[in-house]
Image (cartoon, rainbow, N blue to C red):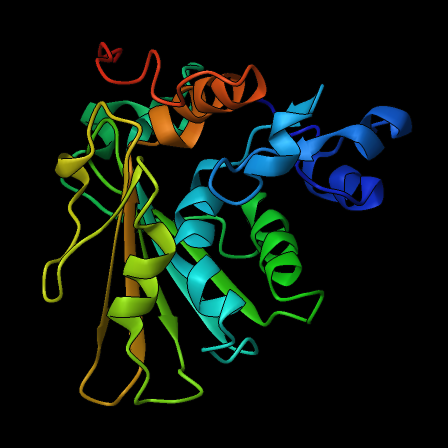
Amino acid sequence: LGPDFRLRDKNEYAQWYGLENFQDDLLASSVYGLSEINREQIKGAQLIGNPGCFPTTVLLALKPLIEKNLIDLSNIVVDSKTGVSGAGRGANQAMLLCEASESVKAYGISGHRHYPEIKQELSLLAGGKPIGLTFIPHLVPMIRGMESTIYVDLLDTDVDVQSTLEAAYKDEHFVTVLSAGIVPETRNVKSSNFCQIAAQKTVGGKLVVTSVIDNLIKGAAGQAIQNMNIMFDIDEGLGLEQIGLLP
């Protein structure tokens, strides 16, 4: 669940996390564990780096569009929101719900640890092409839940984005593409391993893709269980259909 095997460049890992990862052999053999993207590699893996929560929302939302070469990669803007549980369980006055209540604030503006992870994986989806990314997370006054609103420019404004997303995820148990015009809400995925995605065009023609998960399940422990199930060739949903809440 930790970040040790998310970034492929150990120098970048040291820069963003302030730690030295000297386990080069383990890093080389590890697999980035976003289940719906790297399922085949996960099947034969001995070591999996579970993705960050914000990257999970962004990568699942953009994967089909990047693979079909539908969007401009030079200017991707991600505006994300997370509940206070996203900061972990450590004692932190600012993360107490009574402190965070009735307020919304941006953080990590000068650089968030999930930024290089998102950029790295988007580039891999694009075959190594450079990615222009702006990523700003926000803290919102709820306990659990995560939403990303992603702004991109289409290379062809006439493309059927809805059909593209639906086709990409039609066989995925834990990713749901909502019907046209319906917007995902964090409460819809609370205490579940599901990710809900939707896409709409603005009046000006920009494409807006929204994505929600429970940051503690699909964004953390739930995805780890899903990966374990894939590794051992058992039902991906085992242990994930009924999940208790804590907190």
